[in-house]
Length: 369
Image (cartoon, rainbow, N blue to C red; front, side):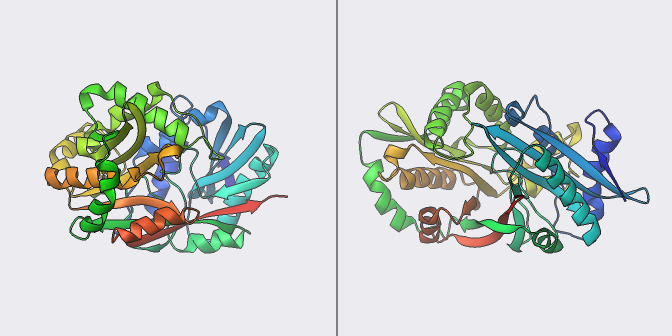
């Protein structure tokens, strides 16, 4: 067996990194190949802000000339604290292959000064490529990790313990507990100091700035917080426009102060499952022609600034989103982005909405010393 470090200048290596998944999932009819450009953006320093305080490496594993596995490792140095992780792990069902890949990532992270490792995660935000799929319905959504069941044995066999249980919920609009939430939401909606509005694509810079203000205030207390800036967020909003309707992004204000948001996108894998991981010109045309057939939304981020978190703003955002999507009449259901077991209040709220638990992922950790 031979481990080869991927060079970003070696197009053959990069191609093999993506083509490997076709071997791993060749008999899995549920698998949806991730879009190549989404994965490559993670490893592009010009697109991924994490490179400003860290680095990443990727490796391929060969056995007798055949590519049989891959892995990526990454670290960040924040406030003189180095955090390490690995992800994008794919391997054929062979424990020796898995051990060699994981140990390669660990050795590199140890050299970088990492004492603790998370896996399998992303070199980026938690809303993408995060956690190991361990149970639930086999319909991977856009930017969601999906894997064969034998990965769990490989990871736990290398001494990793569960750190976070991540649960994903689905809800149909017919199941939504409208009466309960409309009554609760009256507290916020009836307050003249508050208003709730949908994004206006003609004023994207304004809403990007509002989003950044809310995000930087609401997330600043998290250990892995990285501040957003308007320029970066504006680019992301522009790239998301074709995957959203205005009703998919709801903002809350106290007078003129932005205090909360609830953002969703179309569940793109309903179309991307036929794209083979490529968003070429033809597939872009297919997307534009087929976008109207997507009947499911995916909630991706929900945030409220701390001093307004017990004011009913959360239910106001949910009701405004629900009412907009019902009026839009293009969406039947929504997947609610995974919630960690560290957030029991949000889990309780989802259950009160009559949302159904559909998937479970685990984030693992290992102390190197």
